[in-house]
Amino acid sequence: MAAELTLGAEEELHLIDLATSKLSARAPQLLSRLPPRNYAAEIQRTTVETNTEAVGSLAGLREELIRLRRGIVDVAAAESLGIAAVGTAPMSAFADFELTATGRYGRMQEQYRLLVDEQLICGLQIHVGVSDRELAVQIMQRIAADLPILLALSASSPYWNEQDTGYASIRSIIWQRWPTAGATGWLRSAREYDELIADLINTGVIADDKMAYFDVRPSAHVPTLELRTCDACPLVDDAIAIAGLFRAMVRAAEQNIANGRPFDPVPPPVHRAAIWQAARGGLTGMLLDNSRHPTPLPARRAVKSLLWRLRPQLHELGDWDVVKELVKNTLARGNSADRQRAAYAEGGRLEDVVSLVVDETQGPPGGPQPAVAPLRRYRVRAGDEAVGPSYRPRPVYGDMVEFFRRTGEQELNSVKHARREWIDKVGMTFAVDGEKRRFSVDLVPRVITPHEWQALRVGLVQRARAIELFLRDVYGDQRIVADGVLSRELVEGSPGWRAEAAAAERHSPGADHGLRPGS
Image 1: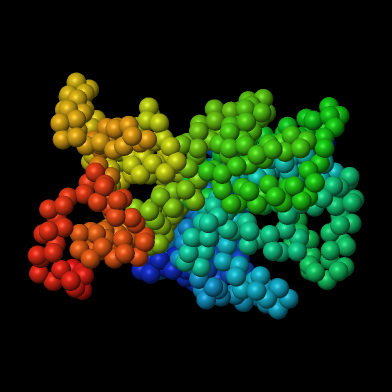
Image 2 (image 1 turned 45 degrees about the vertical axis):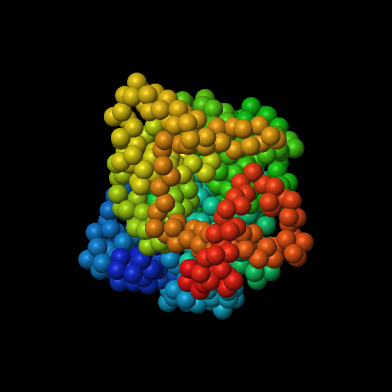
């Protein structure tokens, strides 16, 4: 039987108290005013789950996600709450967990303890219609190697317990602690899959097939193949890009099965390593290719390779133009983890990160339009202070970028020429192996934000005090020479040595007392 290739999605959404930016455990109150067909409780009272209707196209799925988000936004707004579709809420803390009061969740908390108590995470599940379970099990084996790429695109959980974890998706790392998370290992048939589930239930480790938390699985409640790898995505369009790629992956695997093409299953330890890599670096790190013996390659290259490899299936499904554009946009602006860290870098406040993810979740599907247009011809490099990975100037540089845009090329060249002349005139040089080189001065100033200054200030003050103490000593008592740290020849033979300064220091008030407190 051929796969139906319908689409559906489940989104888990954090509830955010807009006054405090913290999680709010008011899901039961909101759910009482929402239709149960499309909205459901989760294990934590700070989360609401949405379930779309089955649709036949990406456009239909997009409309469903927007509709369901709008429904909960309208109800939440009356309670001064917002929603955030991210793997972890930036200001969540362990103490925020409140268990949803049902017998099932109570039993889970009793059995799994800390795993449940720290389950402040939200994911995105994509469903593709594959009602033939035999076919579904075969397909899920073949697409496993590409799942880390989808995780990297979705990564939206760099912050957990109010700190930067160093991961793009800490949600997936937390999720891997469940005994049935990850890959199933090689299975030859639906019967073997069912036997695996039965064995897990018989061990007492899981209660039923709904707790088979594999990265991809035949759904436990609808006739679909379900992707469970991804973080929740604040921008609807990022979720649609992932859905389009996933459906094309399913179709490609179906075709390969029909054509009798063999494949080498990914060994579970390699698959786990690939998922970890995607969780660690997201789109800024390395991913593994899909060769027999995988090798690392830059994440963005891996995404583009997958996109072009799936081009025939995307064309067949009518999704090529849409998915190509959405993937290009995601790579340009970065995933949610990238955008969250950029927001924190601007002001140094997690509250700003919370505002970002709430605004993106509740705003336009493709995200708000930037105040400053992208610099399409700019060469973006890692660590650029002024321009982010989306070619968009960071907010504090907006006015400056517009100034340079208005300035003509002839005027800029004139200013650059004047800069070189001034540097040569005042002798602003430095030496490398005896060779004098011109000291380069950038015409674009480095903007230091208030929170960056707070971090820099400590080191700069310490440096200034150290230099002052050194100068007072070498032009005064020269204890650094007497202690053998530096030789007299090196100090007094330096090109910058000024003998008259030594005389001035000896006659200055308080010369014998070192640096005065507070100076």
